[in-house]
Length: 241
Image 1: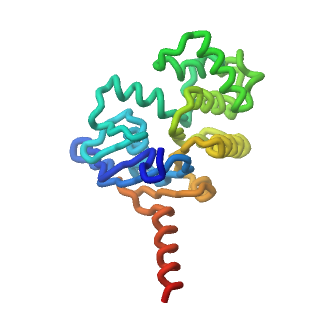
Image 2: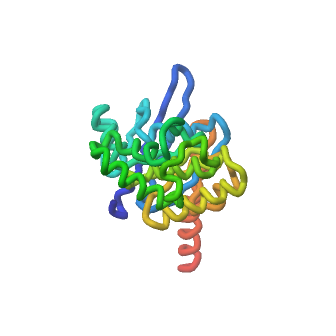
């Protein structure tokens, strides 16, 4: 994406469930290659926003644009294709098939892309190598540690080379050492060019990332990028006086 067209653009997005407003006019733009933490307490709207960014749910009002595509104008089939091409998901609880090998679980990330089975396996093995699990290709989830399971989940998310990686509490089910290892892996993926959004309630994790977006009561309460821009503008104005 070009610098003047965000890879992700939410404009005045709302989401209501009956009388409950889960999102209340959220506006957020993320440029290609950013690493963003979306942080907030339970009920703040961050998970609802994740589902809308991931096109798993549609907003009640407002516009959502992903990689130049206005998702509000797209059919369900077109949204499925958009997800397959541009969006990778990492979940807190892994969501791996117990009876499948690591390679088979990762290859599932390509099921809706029309990739032949042999090619799915090749790409899955390659993705597992990227996350440091080339030696665990034929292992099943019950043979893997928690950190290794999350690495399999990340490999599944990146096997299709997505534009945006959405990580929902990716360290929440892990011990401290495993969580630090997963965060380091996400940093490596970001350094390689992937746009990464981490949804978390962990303030320390959020503070370690380049940009923090704080949610509360269905709204963006604070955005460090806007604050940095405001501070820069103030500094420039002060220097010209």
